[in-house]
Length: 126
Length: 206
Image (cartoon, rainbow over all chains, first blue to last red; front, side, top):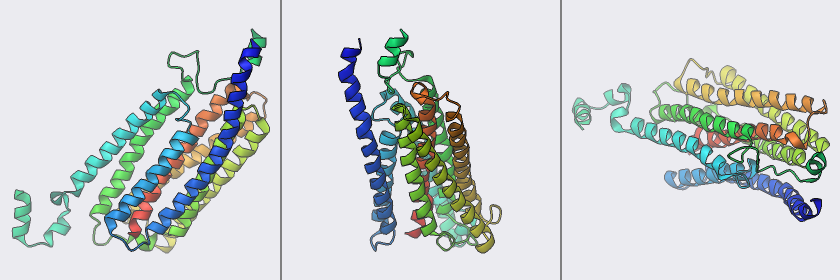
């Protein structure tokens, strides 16, 4: 019984050994990405472009941590599905709230009162 | 039976004793983390919503924040995640000594992160005069980052408990899942910070 298990065991051992270097390389990559994020905020480009770059970079960091450090790459797909259900619900809630409160009609009264009355009534009618 | 169990390698990514193939502790931890995602999602949303329409007397976040300190904290937390991953890797190979050193380093990095946060909070309150109750920015910022800090503190206590437990002789490759579940929690704290670092700190500098 132990003889057939040996090749699988050595393969598994090789995977565990390679994991060590994968973790170290990913940690270095994450540190570099953090540095890039820091540089990005000082670049003289359009705001939406910088926001997009920052979101992409933090998403890359996020995915590297969950798939490698948290073993989702090697674990059953159910773990990924469960976590992404929570993630999608959280992301959806964030998106909906930001859309709702980002709307013109959602501006606080202090801000809208600074505008002329005609503009306020027009905003409410819309 | 016992001889067979001693020879056969342990598959840490598949548990044949459960119907899902996932160890129950790991499944429970993933469910908890999914729910915690929604919790932090709401806190981050609240902060961002109030940043959309800041009141006129609100402090200017860019003048309050210290990007150097926060970047250092981020780097420390990323390195703690690496050490946590190495601790899980070590216990899965049955290397208890290596796991202890990795855990100790993770605790050390976690404490540095907490120290930086305490310093940052003290600086905001006493130097920048931003408290949890005197501005909306203060309320949402301290609630969000404080909740994250509380998660880090719980993680540090859990890590310390596991380190002490490893000296009782009851921790081995067989119950590596205990360390792995704890690792999942610690990495989650790290990914939440990745989002907070971008959404709360970096966006203020644009």
